[in-house]
Image 1 (cartoon, one colour):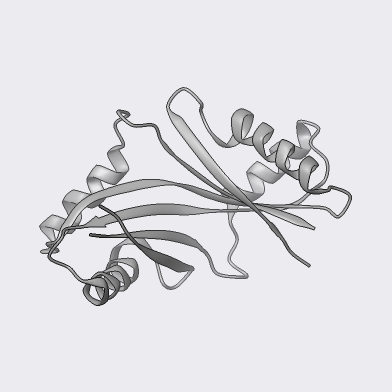
Image 2 (spheres, each protein chain N blue to C red):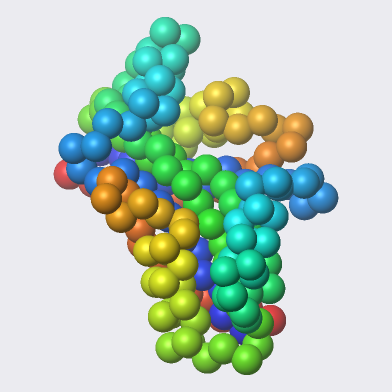
Length: 84
Length: 84
């Protein structure tokens, strides 16, 4: 069976208030040596055993484009892993 | 310079309403062959060039424990990558 591990992040140039808030909080708490923080969403999608790798990959792309990300402001990457 | 790539997910047995909502939405939209969805947060933290790998790793653990995750209900994993 195939599992997709998906990371959705903002495209370059899109303001990410959560990341900026964390970055400022870390500075206020006295953490130095941190140059930049990026934030995003992480998903794992477990497909059933009827899907082969190609099917799992095309379904992953489809749900990323349509449901898990907003393609106007976000980008995604994924990897497929075979699991028991 | 070192960059930490961090994934924060719920511990087993902790209800994840976002993941369940996405799973149901996918079912309602007609997507079959999806057994389970997990959701979590993704962070990239860029350290400045004064930190070596050991320092970057211990700082990563500290901010994960204290700021980026709630250790009562969440777990995290990370990898460190050398970048220019």
